[in-house]
Image (cartoon, rainbow, N blue to C red; front, side, top):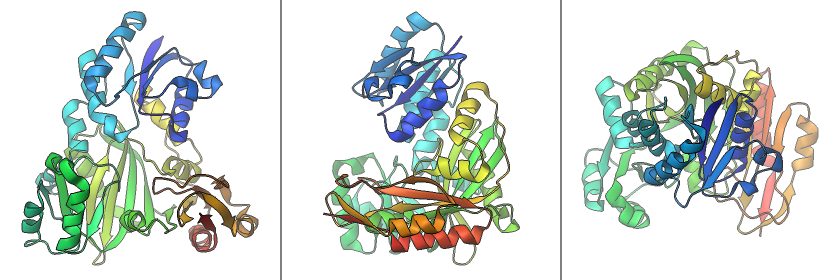
Length: 406
């Protein structure tokens, strides 16, 4: 029987979903390595895990190699070593190399994790992207502003999504950003032009370098604005009309970007912009499944399970991607104020209006602590064959549901 190892920092709701997909494959034995004990998982999942190990630092490849060497004495060779967390991708590749396991290699993993390296590969391949620079000091950042004026975007070289990403409008804000980074600035800070326009993502299933399926999601408003304003309730729309010729340019550029980075087999998450003049720019690409409920949004649009499809692809090199049948989207419910959830207003009216198109919902609970990430305290996911119905409903939700904190 094939032995598969899954690595995860902790057991979030999203992680439980991935482990559920893995435990549903009955011709593999599963090992879990995490920084938390598997006792936090549902009992039925624990029963289907062959081996589990708790480690102090899952991002340290030496620690992982030590644990896996010990596990291998009991299991024999590993079939796959997987993980869906972006910061884990380099360590995963290093471990695969040591144990001779198929999967993304170390150089390719660095291409995806090192954002300055990624931008250089884009430039070499002719992939459209924002003007940028890798700096380590505030003085170097100021020098860049002579070539690319404010506003600018500042983020860690090995960041994930919009975490620790800032819009800076002048020298004072740039200096404050570097104060926040502190000693981490020595690891490298990416500074790039702030693009005015619409922001999207493109999620791509690839097998041996060939694109098998794609979806495009539209952020309203852009994630950086959401991160900068904790009170904003945002939404994401997956429109089923992605085969429209207006997306031909990003499909072509996206393939070129994945080829430049060395993507072979997996699910990638690409952030990109449509400027006001109609041109496109790719921001960055992650070599892992998307977060922020995107797997559910995509699953509802296509009537299949994205997480199960990713697991099947990574373990068996097999996948069947259905056509997009619906437009779908999510409204993210974010608390107003600080502290814990006091009340949720307007929800009953919304549920009554859209009960027939709501597919998934997480209602913020009273006394629930405020979320520490941009997803917020809850969400509502819906789908409908008519894109305009989805767009109007999502707008109605974010404008009329209010989560009060206090």
